[in-house]
Length: 177
Image 1 (tube, one colour):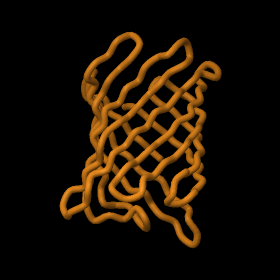
Image 2 (tube, one colour):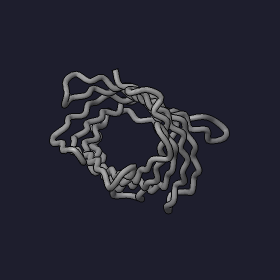
Image 3 (cartoon, one colour):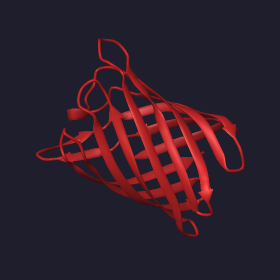
Image 4 (tube, helix red, strand yellow):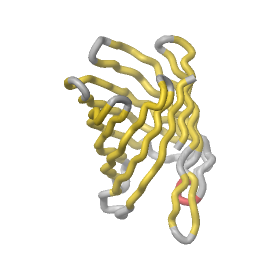
């Protein structure tokens, strides 16, 4: 995963994402690219509330192939629970453009905690709800803040629902320009 972030103003960030590659025998699948932005609505010394708009482009392959653009609009909350302990939650909807596909909904709470200077960890849940079967994941990871604008992460998780049980592992890079 690769997320490029560009701060246009103190409260506005533009984003571009290169998705993951899924190794699902006998082939590989690409989750697709995205563009979007994040607008901070409110901030205090202990929390922030933002709106995030992400446009998924029709660039995925295999199970992620789609001929239409879809937009995800979510509220993102980040708050401190104590020294070295935080909670983030994203909740929103994803709407495909064109055709007759129904919107889906997402809820992603994550608990993060400090392990050492510049090193953190997190555990979380990601739920994606639609008129069909829902998709649910549990995830955990470790982060390294390698600079004030660059974060690396290693994560792993498990899909836990009626659709299938799938294990995943990933590497992430986020850089703010």
